[in-house]
Image (cartoon, rainbow, N blue to C red; front, side):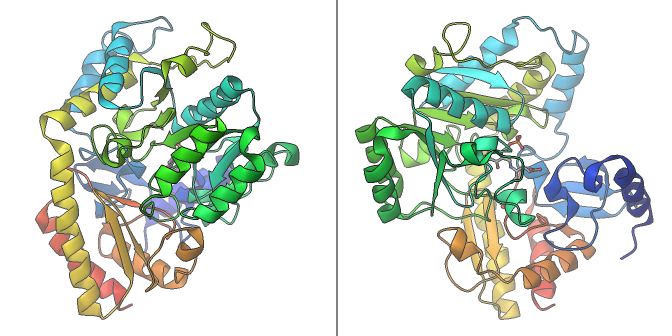
Length: 426
Ligand code: KE4
């Protein structure tokens, strides 16, 4: 499928940008071929530079939960811009956003705004180390928490896709402070805590890992993790950058009933503009400068334009009872995928929670990274490209989750099921 405009843009981009992309996963290295360049997006649709239309199941990796360019958000941005795009001083929207997060997210008593999920998780681990006066961290293989030095150890998402789960440039001495475990492995967890318990500052995890595809915590795993953290004085950090404000108004912690000490947030909270946040117990958060000794800062943190977009998106989600609608859409979408699997005779593993999903090209259930890596990546790549050529855009890697939005329709799902059937037979 020739894409002359995208090809020309990529050739230009490669002259000035490493790999021609500003984020590695966009380079299609997980599926081969070259990325298309998007020219515009609206609702559940993308149009590329050659004016080809796609049903979009990536949603800019989660933020476009209402669909692309929803009126509520674009009007809020346009209106806010007339009052100034950045002040560098406190303003009322920061109070409104903080109040909303504290009211909606069970574990958050105090919160600070940042500009990305990476900043959110980076700040959480620095704060946890400052609060506990300890240095060791625990993370899980395949979980991705942004490109934080201490967390680019057996990382997922693009790091995994591009074969760089342990990034170059991270000092060995620093990486050695991060202990990595298989997810859903109680024995490994207990062994690590019995050996290192009093040295561990925090455990950070995606409570629903979605950077090696999508898999769920086994019953009891999060409860055991919380118990071990409490017994050993380690903090529990939920990275809800993807699941926050998507799986429920209060994120996955509202559904699972586990209250972490700190939570990292991002994506949906910015309405597509650069916003992250981290929050948790007030006694921990009050260690942050200027109140306490843990420094953390940001020129554009709490930016009025970005917060206008984020608040408009959150308000619209609430107004539309978005979380229930997303669950209904998820169930309809799943029906379509299972129809395609039956018609094509493929026994691949489809996993979903709410509006997040992954089709693994393996016939075994997936509970951790090792399971996910059993997928047939070549078959996934063929599936991805046949779908793309037929106007359906899934994430360009087996190790990414897919996202539904409120702009998806039953007609989209019927079309997708037809295309997926053809692609599964490719
Ligand atoms: P950002 O720094 O990219 O805003 O957020 C980092 C991050 C933190 N935590 C979780 C659970 C995340 O999924 C992410 C980023 N997600 C990837 C998609 N898997 C972003 C896509 C990209 O890297 O381009």
